[in-house]
Length: 253
Image (cartoon, rainbow, N blue to C red; front, top):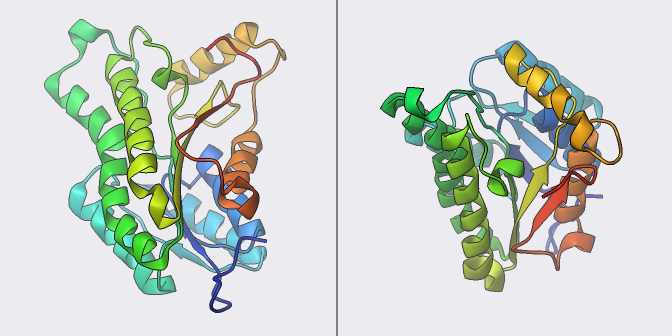
């Protein structure tokens, strides 16, 4: 079960950004399966987010759909506050939302650069800034940032993504040190190539092409990442902080 409050029986609440499909959806369901209420977030596909919310409720947890562009400061604030308003608090934050455009560096515009950093890095700053005061007050919190192998390697055609994910890893380590004494753990998960749905056909092909680099010989599944998130949120994961856990089938890091 998702750990309960020490002083009462109120269930913990998790905010999972970008949880309308793929890894985000799997994480939302894994945490709901452990008894957590879930704030489901997406930027545009309301139907997908409502479907995930229904699945969360089918597992016996409560769900709130909070739509909005997590890379926008004001929208991120409203999403976090909506979750806290509905459930009283946010105990678990999973920063999963990301964009990964493929474009050469010299073709990357200022707008391209800032948009990737807003969604892939700044959004985590916004959400952490909103939820950490409550976690500090409660003496308990779990923050998980999804970095990916872009936080380990620099990839051609994905310069802004690589920079943002390296920054997210730095944010993870720094927050773990600053807030550990408040009972808050902060970790990163670095997924390898994961089987998922993508609107970008080129990105889907890129992921499939990575199979040859994986010693296990196949793509990972969203549930593999979700299971790691569930562990880090559990009491058993309570002594793990400031770490990046690679889940990549043995692909070279």
